[in-house]
Amino acid sequence: MHAIGIDIGGTKIAGALVSESGEILRALKRPTPAGDPVAIVENVVELVQELRDGVAVIAAGVAAAGFVDATQSIVYYAPNINWRGEPFRDALMQLLPGLDITIDNDANAAGWAEYRFGAGRGATDMTLLTIGTGVGGAVIVDGNLLRGGFGAAGEIGHLRVVPGGLPCGCGQRGCIEQYGSGRSLLRYANEIADAGGIGLNLAAARESAGQLDGTIIAALIEDRDPGALAALRELGSWLGQASASIGAVLDPQLFVFGGGVAAAGELLLEPIREAFLAHLPARGFHPEPTFAVAELVNDAGVVGAADLARLHAERR
Amino acid sequence: MHAIGIDIGGTKIAGALVSESGEILRALKRPTPAGDPVAIVENVVELVQELRDGVAVIAAGVAAAGFVDATQSIVYYAPNINWRGEPFRDALMQLLPGLDITIDNDANAAGWAEYRFGAGRGATDMTLLTIGTGVGGAVIVDGNLLRGGFGAAGEIGHLRVVPGGLPCGCGQRGCIEQYGSGRSLLRYANEIADAGGIGLNLAAARESAGQLDGTIIAALIEDRDPGALAALRELGSWLGQASASIGAVLDPQLFVFGGGVAAAGELLLEPIREAFLAHLPARGFHPEPTFAVAELVNDAGVVGAADLARLHAERR
Image 1: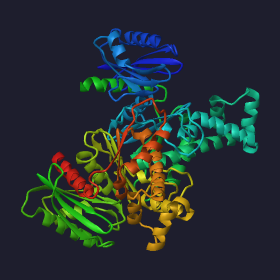
Image 2 (image 1 turned 30 degrees about the vertical axis):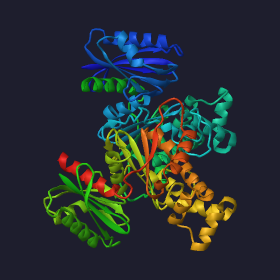
Image 3 (image 1 turned 45 degrees about the vertical axis):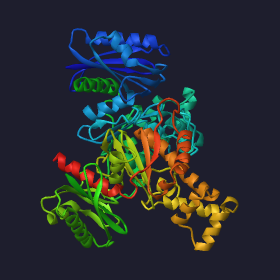
Image 4 (image 1 turned 180 degrees about the vertical axis):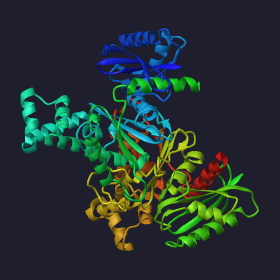
């Protein structure tokens, strides 16, 4: 039976009707009424009603940035919804009687989608890092999504890579999110633009546009601009170093990198692999993981949320 | 039915007949013929024969330091056995026909024992760090031992905590093993002895014994010597900082600390907790884990190896 996946982002709420094989059969979008939890619940309910219209649906899964408890019911903290400790699942189930509903962290939903239908097919142990404004993560162990004791596992963006390093939005310093995110790539690009030399094209692009942004850097990467590639290599190097530490703990067969910058493909994966091997403990003594970019970039959230909800309903 | 656990250490091979409830019914010990793999196999076989004499035994588990593959058969690398890529399980099964045998990493066996019969009872997600000469680790997720894609998960000692930090035996730099191990504690104690002030008793003990060792530091910790306590706090601080990073990835309910220094109990746990909270990302937004010292310190390896072997035999 089909399931519904909803992904509440900072600017839009995406919804999809998803088949058992991960295919999107219907897709809808609305702007996020940011900071208005009541309006968000209403919008989610309406999206679900539209998507289920005329079809049999087994369950609906909702993905959002933030901490979700281990029972997939309570949002401890979700910046996009502006909720703390709210029983989101109960609120939705009251408005959508008869439908099994689960809540999941958005990166976990994306990681599950990659594992089931994307770059992670065939692996049993996979780690996803999503490179967006921040760095999100999801961990698959032995074919299962790792939720952790309190439901907050996979917050890989807050692995510390530099003691006393750059301040992070989580209140700490030196998290990989400050060295391996889209925002970090922008910082590297600006630093290289300031330095002149290979940064001349970055500096010119900045001059003409007022400031650098992801689109400009992506275009320069596509043109193989040496400055933009140097910024990408610095990003990849940090992600590879973090992967070596993650590998020591989790030992995945496969690392998958998602988010906008994953469009750079091999140009991103090469420095990641290089730094991973250069920082791999006891290199040569055990098999090495593979590295891939995500396949379901834009749809991973809704597809994963739908599939996790289906699994939850089937296990009841 | 009972099972047998064997723990191959650097200096001794310990063996035990273990009941289903984790009780040790018989225990034997032999010196390790270090560097002689053939003699080690012979000794393990003889220990198993002696321990199973006259009782029904379902399986035997062998724990050793090093990497073991995900099928619990092959030792990729074991410093105490001096083996690389050896089919250890097959060799033992040929000499012990009819007995199901599994190989496990020693820290994984210890972690499993703590989870089943020790400090981890009742948890579903637990992380063990064993503080010995190095730092070992084991990860329990959702009631299962995390083996990883290649069998080498839980090598927490090689989580990097300082980029470009102290060199580690794994070939890298800055691993937590160089900041949170028994050897690190000794280094801190020597530094404090050199510094004078609260280090006066450490300096005097070093002067009279020729050099500091774990026994001297343990005795000074028991006497609440300010210098020895300062060294212990430095150790605990690093372990707490590493736990914050581990928590971001694994989100365990419980951290357990084993190894000789765990005898310090609350004196060790207090600085760990303090540093963990000081470095916890998004503190205040989700429940906090608890911290405990291991309960089965000396027997954890044999008890865990026996229980993991029993589980393997029952699942066949």
